[in-house]
Length: 310
Image 1 (cartoon, rainbow, N blue to C red):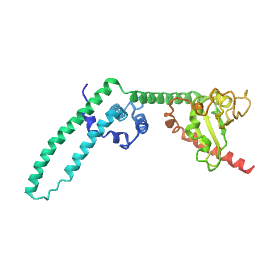
Image 2 (image 1 turned 45 degrees about the horizontal axis):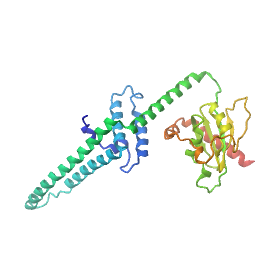
Image 3 (image 1 turned 180 degrees about the vertical axis):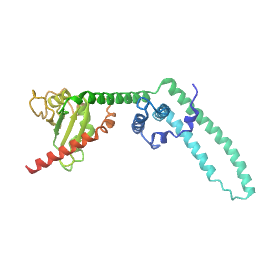
Image 4 (image 1 turned 30 degrees about the horizontal axis):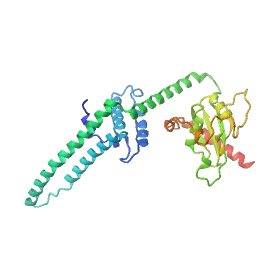
């Protein structure tokens, strides 16, 4: 299979908007952000969307494979060094010295061309190998993007279908745990930890950790069933249990109860409370519905002020 020569000339780091030292996680995150904006399914009227999406996919494929990335970096470094050598040429040198240096450069150029050709061949071989074997990283990231697009479409359709349901309130829960004001670990409950704990019950629409009152947060679920399961079953970390109570959207047939340190959890250790699934896509989910997020923040602040007065 022929190698895309234009890709060898393209700056893959600049295409994704990442640094040369970027980790695989940073590369995949940058790919998802850019690929979502130019995905052909989301840009049916843009004829260049497919081409840009293909270029981003090539960049992810190369930069997330250690061997291919190393070969690409060598090609990139060789070209950069050649440009630096050309830039440093001194046109004011005497003709005799210039002629001598020209011969030396010619000899060095032959060596450099051979080295660059060998490096380029190595990169071409790695790219061919990736195309033949298929890129697991690319397939996984494209799967996540397709899933993200599907969820967005379903959410839009759900909003359209639910326009006739007046006064519908999404379920919101209040979370509390022990946490000292100077505790940098926040009692073991960072935003990522809370999301991993709660996501196993269903899709989390918003999560807001109070900036004024330590050990306090509000979570908004998409479905009432997910919120019910979290209230009934979630105990949080073994060494610092969660206290979960209803804030809004509680079903009328269920009492408003709190389950601190629930004993009906199927997990037996702090580490096993967290799900093993991949939650990288949650970063993009938190970017949605800014208006709802602001509403939750204001609601949490009002509640904190009311509690401080009592």
